[in-house]
Length: 86
Image (cartoon, rainbow, N blue to C red):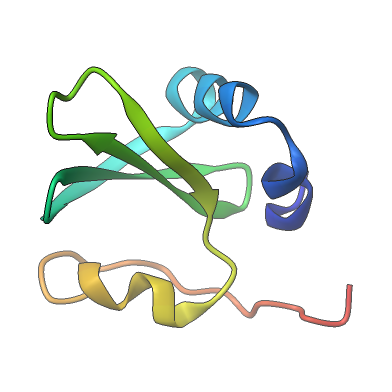
């Protein structure tokens, strides 16, 4: 599965896949959200938990290096070439 295919799935399936099959890496806080970073298949996934930490506001596969910038100050991440031609 590619990051683009993952992003086409319904949000509840995205969350299920990331939480059950992904590898938790790190988290960060932004405003009202705790954002968990996972490694799934061959890409990174963010799960945005709302302030109550029980509700998921957003799940997305990261398709650009710029999305990883908030994490790079606190952890080392392996960056692979993202093929935009697919």
